[in-house]
Length: 414
Image (cartoon, rainbow, N blue to C red; front, side, top):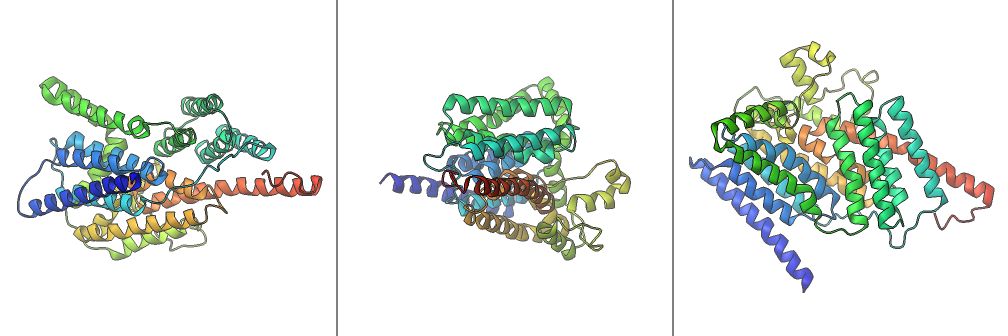
């Protein structure tokens, strides 16, 4: 009976959200001008209420939605014109993603799992790779290994030990950010910082996970809106927004500008983004006609190659690239991308027993998908997969060594 009530509750929220989006969209077509700030606020609260905190895909996608859709709209909807079709399309695509993945829970913890020598050695090796990356190659390249190390070490650990390990992860991130970080890759760093937090929260079944993550976003933006009650405070808010234009506001502003303008339709450009989704890792030296990522292509066409040489590129949330290439038809094709992402995640989830971290890595980068679309999302996911390959090779070598030295004694415990 309890499961039926829970299902009906979530189902009612999904259905109510769908009806609200449909009615608002119909009202817009009739010429009404609803407050997009209030619309996105109500839908965001409904999405958070309906999502499952045990579902890492739900958590990370909603972090992306709240950061790159809710915050810009709720902050600036009275400062610039916001295309209502864009807002409703983003809301509907989020609703579709949450509904399609509502049962896709990642089983990352086994009952009675304990830390054992092989796991500890693997964790130490991962940390060694991390140190080499932080001081030599690139700390952001090795951030997946922080997650793997933390996951292995927290198996079977008591709450106090787990909290200590989580604190060590935060210290590592703080040291890297203060002394070695160049400033690029903030979203990568934030995503991989959230991974251990989510693992820790679910490992010890701590309540109020949604409140812990999303209440600061909702509350912070509400305070920011409240500042607009006076002229001085309003100018403070404008100044605050100006300082954020390069991070979480610009992607939405680019997509909004694409929604409010018309360009020549370029089907091949969008097809190129789908190709990059699957073949991002193929070196350009071996593939001279390899398509360009949307952010790279837009920057070259509109700002010149010099901006690329300076390390500049753009993002326009996942719907933006569709609008740029196909104008209003992009609202339709963007849902095919949502289906592609869901299918990819389910494929990795299906093979979780053979490769337990692939689905987790994929889910961790979902905020990047919301922020920048297919090409940049695929780039970071494939990069994470390559780094994880080093871990799998090391685990295999440990098992071979254990079998050769001890005749396979203790393999079952591993």
